[in-house]
Image (cartoon, rainbow, N blue to C red; front, side, top):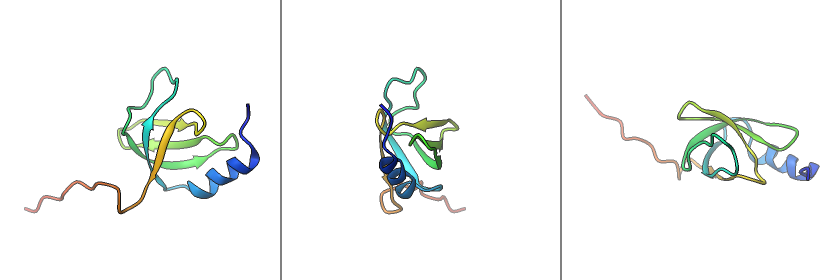
Length: 85
């Protein structure tokens, strides 16, 4: 079943390019990105898939009706402490 136009527009509006997301779990992908992976949204296509470049080097589309993920805000993203020299 195809995603409704309204739902696709919702994802395009709420997950614009540059949005940080974290994958909670991936559905039935034969080579899934690991749960907990963090990445940046590159685009939302006309089918409603979020195309993400993950920090681990992988790029993959997240299907909102199959995969579980959430948006990361600056307040919730964990930053590695910077070492001073």
